[in-house]
Length: 133
Image (cartoon, rainbow, N blue to C red; front, side):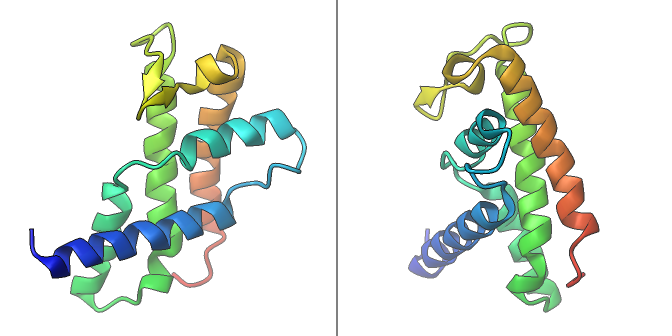
């Protein structure tokens, strides 16, 4: 992998991490436990390939990265929602994701389901309220 590509991947990851953090409900907003679980799952690292692809397509089309922050976050929120639900006991029953406890283990099954559902809803809210698109 070229240095230019590595730098682009790192820059895309850093950009989307900041954008995700800005769009997620703060830990201080009620219901705190739900928002903690959403942030726990969405900000736990990962490769951020889907947002990176969003930024890459935008770059190829001449679209500024700041215009794509909302869509990049939305696609990542949908992805994290799917991971939370996939890890549930009724599905794969995984205890670890990316080297740490899955959402239903860290919190509880009901909170994990609601956190996933909240992230899915947030994805559409981000797109609907994005004035830059």
